[in-house]
Amino acid sequence: MELIIIRHAVAEERETFAKKGLEDQLRPLTLKGRKKMQKICQHIHDHIKGVDVIVTSPLVRARQTADIISQFYLQAKIIEAPELAPHCAALAFIKWLRTQGANYKKIIIVGHEPHLSTLASLLISGKNESFIDLRKSGIIGIELESFSAAEAGHGHLLYAIPPRFFGP
Image (tube, rainbow, N blue to C red):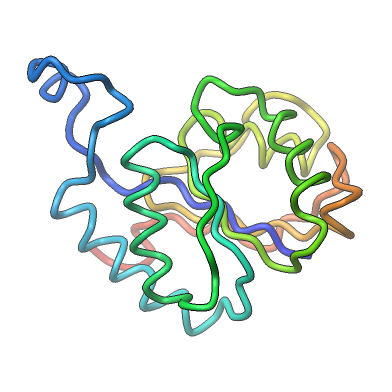
């Protein structure tokens, strides 16, 4: 089974958006962020095939990123998982994988930092601390024996691709 972890694309600046009097969870992607994610998806679609589902944080910027990704994986439905919100523990999403991921072979998840790098580190090393630098629009692929038996320390890193790999 393959878990593809993608950090949301570039969103509006937190401080600028806060001046509008709106909650951070509503902060959207910038036009530049959208275009960059579309470019990345054009590249990864050629190499990452057979995605069953896209699971996203409920925050607007993650959902917008998931919507862009779904344009390249038309067969994959989008599911929102509160376990991918920035304040949740990485173990919460591993529990989600065990209960909700059993019917899938390849899952893309979209979320936030430091949650995603902590999740990846936990799956790979068994340590609940981040040792990975996941930039906005960055991608990490992890192989697991099965989603229904997902455990800390049992994942194998397949790839870690920074967004700059795809150009400016």
